[in-house]
Image 1 (cartoon, rainbow, N blue to C red):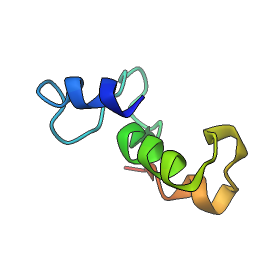
Image 2 (image 1 turned 30 degrees about the horizontal axis):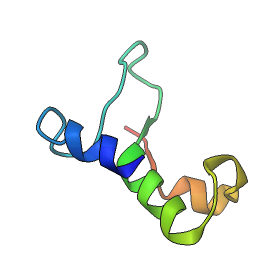
Image 3 (image 1 turned 120 degrees about the horizontal axis):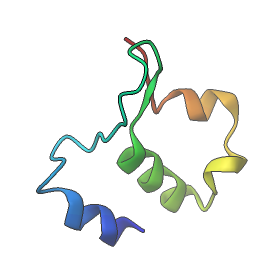
Length: 59
């Protein structure tokens, strides 16, 4: 999965991609989330709330 993100870097250099439907919805740092999961051998659904919170950006 990280290889796909590497290809997207030229389009999303900050690693953040969102579909801005609602301005008050949090954004997720998918690249960082994917890297963290790969390094810790976890799937995103298996993260604790505390771990997941590290990747949420609230305005």
